[in-house]
Amino acid sequence: MPTNITLTVNSSKQTVTTHPDRPLLDVLRETLGLTGAKYGCGEGACGACTVLVDGRPLHSCITPISQAEGKSVTTIEGLGQGDALHPVQQAFLDVEAMQCGYCVPGMILSAVALLNRTPKPSREQIVAQMNGNICRCCGYPKIVEAIERVAGSNAEVSAR
Image (cartoon, rainbow, N blue to C red; front, side, top):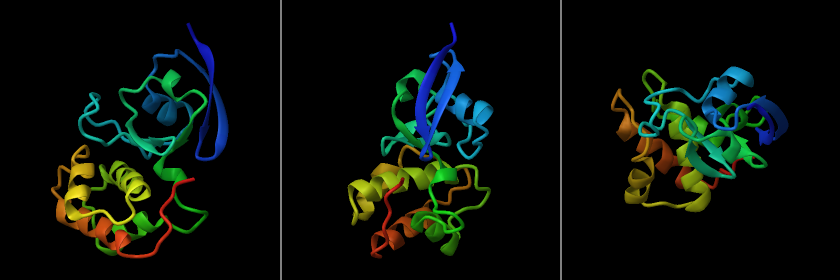
């Protein structure tokens, strides 16, 4: 039975009426029009659907909307400030860490979560964190380079 579920998405309080078991990804894309998170495998294995929930990376394709109730959700659309890209987004552009771009929103959000938790991660920590995100174009060296670039700077990486 549909119910009202309230959550904060990209710093904006949202109330949606939907079935509590509906995937968060579907609500973000179909109800709220936020299409940055992508449907990949539908099993939480590829990371294309990664969003941040209370600052932690989460596979939104397997997360019921009810688990996000009362929480703060950040999607790729809410990461930057106005026209300014987030430092991780900028680093991905600067080092050309994308080919087709399908995985990039999830990759960036996973990287932001890591850098918020561990501002100066080792290469091993970066690889371990990013292990939950698959790039079919095999852009991993550039992705790691982008994250290392931000980690080596003094950029503020926190998400809203």
